Length: 486
Length: 95
Image 1 (cartoon, each protein chain N blue to C red):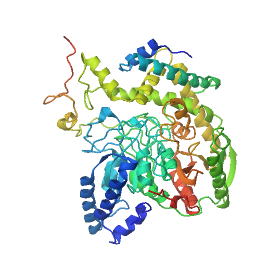
Image 2 (image 1 turned 30 degrees about the vertical axis):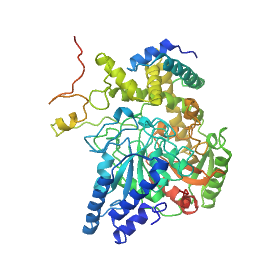
Image 3 (image 1 turned 180 degrees about the horizontal axis):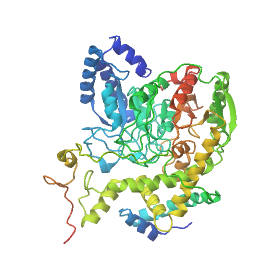
């Protein structure tokens, strides 16, 4: 069994045909984790015992004919999603001992589908970062080159999928945190429309931007996960009561007659790495050969997206993270002089540097005298970014561009310079600010052998269109069949 | 844009963080750089543009005011750093 290549779809066929049991599959993945984890460091918490129990239950379901496409499929979960009884740290020391008393809505749904949970995947602390270097626990390495970052913040999820240390994973995307690591690790990742997937039980970073989504080896695998996790949930008041289509109906020919917008602000961006530029040119040729009609479009406020995002997201974060006071959960500092000081010592000892920086930035931008100049202004620019997309989607069905301006950078390269790190999110932030979906699909390798991702974005609730287009691209290219040599 | 150590100290206090002088100075330098970059937003004409707080239009859903099961007390208290049978315990507030 080649776990490096085995998709959820393949594994499902083997499971229902009796070629493979869920227990054997889960054990094989656990063995691979044991071999590779010392090099990759994707998991914060591994639950081998629980996974094997769930796999045995899945085998029983398969024997009873009670099967979904995810029954018996070993999956990894980003450590920002609450799992009842299984430690959920958010990559933070402050939550080192936190055991959620309830499941996130997506976990309930995957459990009902019969998925097997291997454990919790590494991430930038509270999902704040683009490299997973902000984890308080470990540095996750890119399976394609161990000296490089896997991307972030869902870096553990992307690395685990790429290395065959799970068959599929959940990530969360607040400013690119699913799409960028998917691109850097050569896997597929989808950020759904805001409100498509319930955020109940997703630990909040920036509530108006956060969204959970699937990461997998193929577009179809992401579609299968989407089928299981999407839909309205009354426990999340921002969850949208739109019907959920069957995302896995992926016929080919999706690009035929599709109007594909090429935003000049993405394709002509100054900092675009030559290898990324080259991969984009090839991708455009591919979609044209598949019958797409390309349209030059403009998203004129793109150059302001980074500034607007890095005001709005830290403002929301500074408010959301006020809950970590050492009273109801988390690691309380023992060294204090009273209650207020207990709050301060707990938060100072518990949060890492980037989280503290964003709390301070957000608190500053929301404080008296600065609110209008920063948060108010950024919220207005957000409206203009939304208008950009509205105008673009009047001329085209999807927008196509790079996910990240460069291939994965080296570990440590940008850790001292937060602003440069923020700039690397330039092509992904806008989708979160506008609430629209975006998918990353492999579209090439750099001269240094690192994966490059193609991003396809569409209007609200166009996931079906994006998955079909990405599938069409995937079926006519070979990039998804390339795997890292480990 | 210049940000002083004292300004960062003030904001840190508001955010319930207790940073030492070295950290305050590093943070002040980084914040100044970040905020200077944020000032590029002033180049955008936003006269008459309504702000957006949520990209998907939503109305607050309401439900009937009926009693429902909720997390039981023991489960809610299980992660408490300090607790007794029925409450979270915090350091003494009033001497």
